[in-house]
Amino acid sequence: MPNELLSVIQKKQAIERGLSDYMNATVLERVLNYWEQEYGDQPSFVLNRFLSEICNTDELRFYRKEMLRKVLSEMSAVEKQVLLEIKPKLEPEELISIDIADAFFGLVDAVTLTVTATDLNDFNDEVKQQLQDMGLAIETSVKINDAAFIEVLPLTLYAQVITIIYECYCEFYGPAKADQVYARAKMQIKTKYPDVDLHQLL
Image 1 (tube, helix red, strand yellow):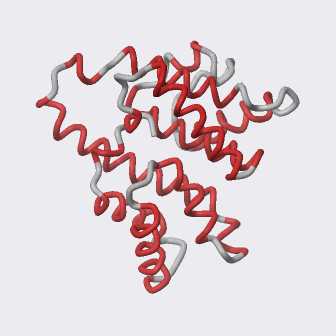
Image 2: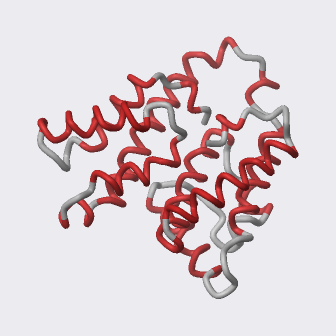
């Protein structure tokens, strides 16, 4: 889902709804102001880093994954509504792009190829479990960088899936390496698919 569909205000409101059950109004307002200053113009996959920074108590750290899923769910709901509003203005061929699908597959594959052989099965299982926890219907019998897994995913879920993969990568290897791997994969995709707007994937 293209992040530019949402304004900073819309994303901030989605984050507010996603976090409101986990902190009081005063803390929430401070957290939202911090997000707006530091992350307002960043792609959705940095939400995991943002939550890692604000979850500074044992209780918040315990609920961090749940908080991420809630925030992503709120953002997805807003994005779907925005897309429904603009959909009649778009031609069908503009809504579905083979290049975007290929770029998505390339990005997922590039990230997955950096997972060590000993971690690969656990990494795949963890990503698929988190996607299922979010209520996504996925192909569970193949690896996440297999064409059979990718082809059943609608375009509107690409950014959400990439964010989950990023979160799992952080869990396995830490945010620093995750950022490095994603930045390198992003450059590879940008070079190979120059006409694809990467905001539709990140």
